[in-house]
Length: 193
Image (cartoon, rainbow, N blue to C red; front, side):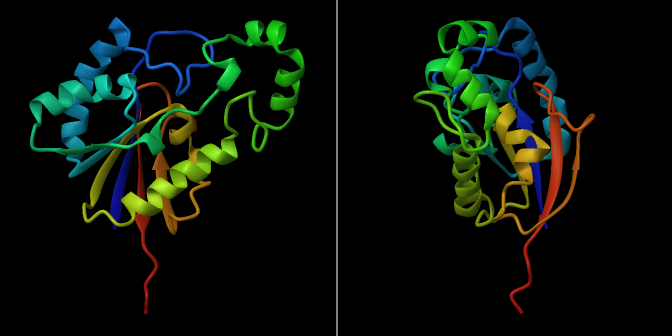
C-alpha cells in the first residue's frame, strides 16, 4: 500500500489570487517554517518527492533536500498552481471592480467556469489526476511526498482523483489544508485477480 504525503508550500509573498502566473518567493515566516519541516518530513521518510516547479514549493523543500541529498525529487508542471488568468495577483475587491461580470460568472460556477484566460477547477483536477495516473500509481516507491498548492491538497480535490482506487484516510486539521501543513493518505490498488 502506498503512503502519499501531501505538503502544501509554506507562506509565500503576494496577495490576492496567487496562481501559476505568480512565481513568488516564500516570506521570512515561510522560510522559517520550511526549516521546521525538516524533522517532520524526516519522520515520514519519503522515498520519492514530486513537487510543483514554482519557487514557493522549491523553497519549502530546499532545507530538507539540502540535508537529505539522497532523496529523489522530480519537479512536474502538472502540479503547478491553478491558472487564474486575468484575476492573477488581484484581490477579491480588485476583481469585483475590474471584472464584475466575469467574477459573478466564475463564482456562480467555479467547477467548470474559469476566470478570463484561466482554468476551471475541473481542468485543474484533470491535470492533477493525469499526473497521478502517469507518475504516482506507477512509481515503485511506497512513501511519496507531493509538495504543491492548496487546490491540490484540499480533501475535496483529493476525492476528485478517480485514478486513485481507494483512499483509506486523510488526516488534517478541520478538513482544511493550511500553508505548510502535512496530510497523509493511503492508497491501495485493486487486485487484478
